[in-house]
Every structure is written in C-alpha cells, then in structure tokens.
Length: 344
Image 1: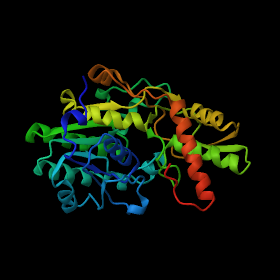
Image 2: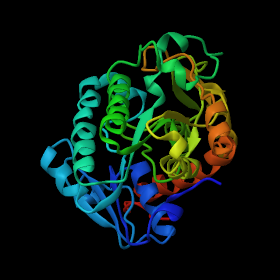
Image 3: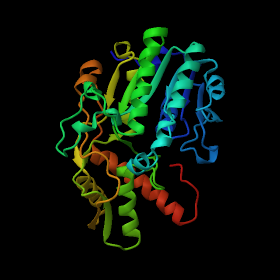
C-alpha cells in the first residue's frame, strides 16, 4: 500500500511549503489542510495580495527564499519541506528570461541546507520535464521520455539546467547526509487557480483564455504560437498534488527522480479544438511562427511510476480542461466587471 503524509506524520507536525503562494504550492497547502494537518507554513516572495490561494489556518510568510537567512527561518521546527519555489512560467517566460530561471538554484541550494541542519525528515523537490535531452524532442511524434533520458545531459537552456543541477543536490544530500529527498519531474501542470494571463501562463490556460476573449469580443480568430503541430502532455492539478504526496513518502523513491505527468499526448491544435468545443465556438487559426514554442514534442513515460506506485495521473485532458475553462471564464468575467479575484 502506498504511504502518504497521513501515514507518516502527526496532524500537528509542521509542513513547510516553499512557493506556497503559487499555483501548485497553494493547491498542495489546500490538499494537506483538507487532510486535517493543522501546522502548515507557506512561504513565498510575492506580496500576500498576489498569492493564488489563502487557506484558513495556514501560516503565510512573505520572504525571498533565495536568501539564506530566510530559508533558515522558514525551516525552523519543520518535519517535512516541499520546495515548489521557482521563478518560472510558460514557454514564453522560460525562453525569454533564462537568467531569472537559473537564479532559482539559489532557492534550492539554501533551502536544502537549512532543511538538513534543521533536522527535516523528508524534502521534496519539484523538478521538470525540461531536464530531458532536447535532442530526443525534435519530432512532434516523440516517444515518451523515460527517467533515464535526462542523460547524456542536454537540458533546456536556463530553466532545464537549473532543475537538473538541483536534482543532483537532492541526490547528494541523501547520499552524504542521510536526509530523505524526493524528486518529481512535472509535465505541464494546469487547472483552476493557475496563471491564466500576463505572460507566465501555460498552454492550456492561454488557449482557454484566448477562446473566452474571442467569444467575448465577438471575434472569430485565435493566435497560436508555432504551427500548432508541437505536442505535449498536460497534468491536472489534483493528480499533481496526490502524486507529490505519494512520491515523497515512498522509501523506494528516495533520491530518485521520477516522472509526474499524464501520458496523454496531444498537439496544440488538438488542445485548441478541445477548448473550442467546450466554448461552443469555431475560430480561424492564425499561426505566429516566430513565437516561443519550445521543443517539437514531449510526453511522459509512466512505466516507472506505475510499477513503483501502481498509480499514475489519470484525469483526462478533456475533463480537466472543462473545469479549467469554467474557472478562467469566471475570473475573466469578474475582471471585466471590475471585481476582485473570485475564490470559487
């Protein structure tokens, strides 16, 4: 049977979520709160007014975890640490701001040291499919990527290299200092409460928003980055947080990188078709061929996670998109009416 936090922690043990003001961090805080954990500390450098979720009873701290002193303070009394803090976004952000992405290595460097010195029992690190060798991702009909495909290393510039090196930190803190670390390589997480505009949003949210905007303005066209043939898999947020919990508490996965993503491969054109169908509209597609588009194809090979946990992310893209589209539409309409963020 897979162990989870409920099996390994007391309800009043302190859980630290770095990046707790972000999309995945906020969802993880809600997940643990729903399970009855009473001491959850979220730390994020964003002002509290910009946090994605506010969970009743969760300790919220605004601090920059790229600074060592803040990491030391954040880890005090923590039993487990979940590092989801990073300066990142969708492909547009990753390709344009490589230095900012690389500087996130300061967060993991200081946080894992502070966690080990504080006696933290388990440390989770959120890696990315961007660590995989880009030579294996030049065809939209890409074969699914296995964990071993990260080497020989040729990660995506900036963000991918930062993630790969930080994975090594986790492996060595286990080997040399005995702290249990867990490493999950996320494949394109999406869902309600996520970024949906402003330049950091990922493809599912961006396409949902563009369809909603087109309908609202009675326009009949949509701009698509690239030729629309590039392929990806997308993981729904509920699958992501459940996977984080199981991976972190599986002793067979200590210091072992593992894919955490859906293996449902779709093209961007297929993604647009799903969103058009959900929105009951058909749009003319204008392709922006010089826009950031990332690798030609990427998919998750889930053989290892299915073998180890007898589980893998299972929410279909269509089902997840319906929930995401509805949530973004609520936010869009609220903003148009001059209202604040809608917490539904």
